[in-house]
Image 1 (cartoon, rainbow, N blue to C red):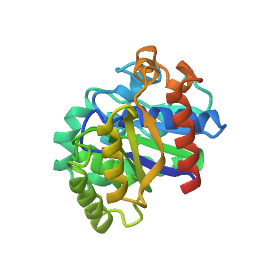
Image 2 (image 1 turned 90 degrees about the vertical axis):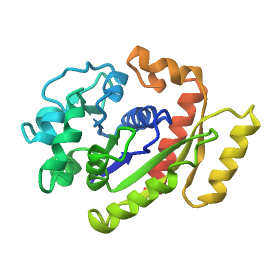
Image 3 (image 1 turned 30 degrees about the horizontal axis):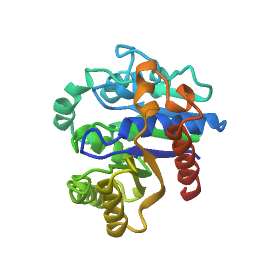
Length: 252
């Protein structure tokens, strides 16, 4: 049976989408069928694998009950990687979902059949703890938290962990934290080193050994509609994401 991972952090610009896209691509590269579900109205994960913002049906129709996951998921240009694309219409779901009783279970119910089809499903969450992210946390088995190696890295993590505890207690008791991954790490700066040390001291059992470097190839890749492992497979960024994928698989 496949595993469902939510890639979440309410802070923007920490590498959630980059991590979701590249982990999904690394898993597919290893020969496992994987599904990338873009639930961010910005549609960055969708565009990051070369798809358009206005594919129909999309995740908005999935959450509204107008389409099934089999209708929404489309094959990407990468073997073994399927994508449930986002739409800017998802912004409206943030307003509509809270009005519907039991709406926090919409994504969970919609993804019920994918466990038999996909070894890994990765949910790319928006930078908030709103209804879309809550839907992802209810649907997921595990949550992976990208943390940027910058001054405000720890700001908001307490709030995120509180939200995860609430979801575990009230909505999804099987949810666990797969781990935190330090992203955008520049080993040349003392600040990045200090932030990484602080994160590891606060959460010694949760932080992945793999660190994602600040790397120009990672930044370029979305403009080509490709994960970095296909844009430049020999780059430091690609190597780091391959290592992270191995570590995620090992932790289970």
